[in-house]
Length: 173
Image (cartoon, rainbow, N blue to C red; front, side, top):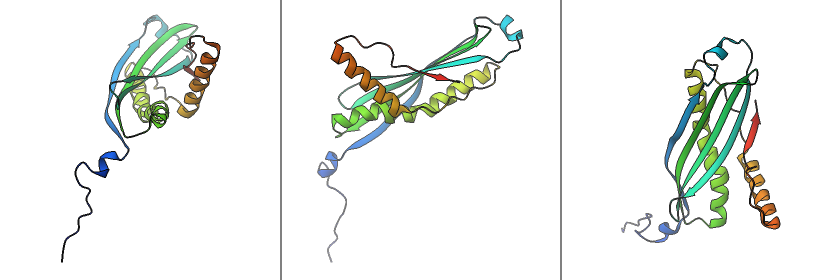
């Protein structure tokens, strides 16, 4: 009786299969500022919190991209800054044999969705380590954010104007 192997041969059809791989997820930048401490810490009031989120994609080569998800969290009391947190969570993602028209949505929707829980955790941790109640960021619809950016790019192309910095999402908290 002869043995039949179902494993693909080296360099054959399997090398043409589409593939997506997370090479690395890392905290690229994190800062906390308390410009009005210690006096503002004596004021007893609920802070107003504003959150801005943005995505940046940097191609490292044809198939490898860095996606950086950044957030700025600003808390104010009596219109003075209580604290300001800026964080950038990044990842390196590899795409093999995936059509370019499918890579762009993955970079704008899928990769940020993977990075966001890490970003949320790091922001919550740094705020609580600074002595404040942790702020838990709301979920983000990255698909909607991606669609909004596409519409802005189409409008900018139609009017031949440079794209405005309106792609950031400001979350109410």
